Image 1 (cartoon, rainbow, N blue to C red):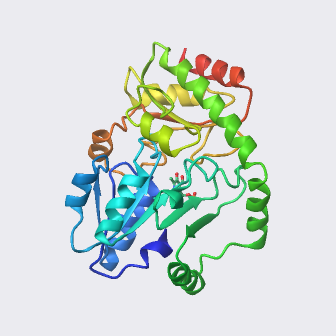
Image 2 (cartoon, helix red, strand yellow):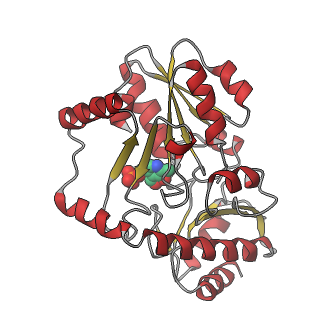
Length: 302
Ligand SMILES: Cc1ncc(COP(=O)(O)O)c(C=O)c1O
């Protein structure tokens, strides 16, 4: 991400979404703003409003879909069309989907990023990133930055990612199936208020997800009827199979509390506006037996 933003110059602007991984928000606002690259955050549901929001300074659209942690879906093709018309770059952080579920270059994106730490590695034992582009000139600018700035992965890390990719299709298929069942279970639990999962037919992004993804992913978020930190903490500390941790995309299921973990950098008023409540809990489904996963959640919620 740092290398991509370094393609820009002071005075340029990044336009991004208002529901974004906390670390990406942090990098845009707290790192690059100091060097004169401003960022604005808007909803990208409506291509016309997006076109209006693009200013003379905007050089890059940065989107993420499904979003972290609200699992909103953005229409990649529509956003990339606007970027092309305006002559600016569109980048998609494809971490939540993985290349097995979604291929933004085919939908018009100029750049795709992955935290390969997640599904590509798949075993929570490596930290790695990838940028994928089609254009040779863009690739050579990024290669220059990679060499100059030093985001160069070690050989053991590369080995682990390559090994992980061999089972990507098996892991992601199984994790997605688990997510479908867990989301259905949560929807029927009396202590759960909202379930956020693009695979649910009532999810506002369901139709777009169906169009641009091969399955709906393995991330599920939900919040509680009693919307307090304390209640969320009770659930988080009671699971035995789900491990409390920030990352995602590994073979083992994880549970996390975005407000105090992954999204702690985002001011409370900002996060509440997008539905990231105090009790919001995020699950990364792994490949375990789905009945065991559901039993674990049932026990923790009860
Ligand atoms: C959507 C998204 N992008 C990027 C990252 C950054 O990943 P890494 O931990 O590899 O720096 C994360 C981490 O959670 C993420 O969720």
